[in-house]
Image (tube, each protein chain N blue to C red):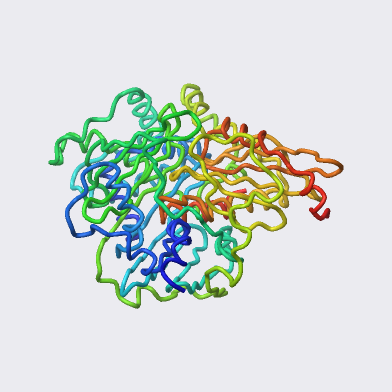
Length: 189
Length: 342
């Protein structure tokens, strides 16, 4: 078991979910890969937290989507209590888990996600409802508009992003964020 | 060079790669280990120093749009010097090791992440915003709660945009050091456009020299960062063009190095956008708007006399703002005459 994944997992368990990543994950074409990663993740989680997860082989994508949709519009619970309520954790975990899973697969794929190289959305595995929700996400249409760029144009675009990122958070100085933007700019487009 | 002479670099350095010499920050105050700041603004003031003067190791994840990056970082502040090592966790890896102003970048043999693009090849942009900007004027800071992330107690600060020309922020800061552990950039509907977060973190002064050594084998590129002598002239001038309109609070903040054009960055203290004005040469760029997470790119072409220029606005601002800025660029006839065609 990769130490990095364990750390990621541990951290994400305590945190709220990033719905964007989860939905993005669900639109990946390789749902079999997702499933097998999920099962592995389950084992890890059980190991760490000494409790049971859903049975292996369940329809994870569907379940998570359902969970996400049912949470839509639900306010996160106020973080007033300092003690970590067991119930609260279990309420949170499916989404947190999916984020972790998203990260795992991101690492596994080795490149992060890149709209340019991904297959068209796997419509056969994604219910219509989820598709509509996905279309509302900010990543949707705008990014696709640049897919027609040739290598030279992408390079120029990257250059703009990079130069901007180099002086990005002047004033406040957000350190690692600025750095991450640099890396991100060098990777995309 | 005296302290006063170095101050103008401060804001820039903080923004860039965690790189801040101690002398520059010596007057900033650092309440690390001291009493806990109370208000949202006090937390914010602590943010910059905390990023550099805290020693830690960890892994952080950054996502915007369809991109997700993960980096492992070791950051040590000792005897007034920042040393750090960053290892890309994605693709074929690669790493960057920095000791003070010296940077060594190791490229993997293969892989899509272009580290040589990450290390700026020229002198850094020179920031002339030396003061912490009055963020509160453009954002409504509020301490919204406490949480626990990556094993640390954090305080959550919300910065809600006071107008629609900018995005809102949410920052999670570690309680003792003020270190930024997580951040969100959100639009007016509260959707998260950009997400940064440490997934594992160990704040400790116990970081050995070995952890800061290059461990990847591959092609090495070494550079020493810093402004070149006598390279202070171009700062602050929007050479050859002006903006008729810009969102309130955004002041010229840095003059980034640019290949063949004129570029200036504007910041309101939190968000920034860059305006590039370049002559259109052989390469034809598409025009219109696009975005990656919280970053908008708006491009348009404009003709002055017989020359055509590409105006690109890139920044963490909503698309309508970027568009309005791009449309307000006025190019002087002078620039038109001076620019070489290609």
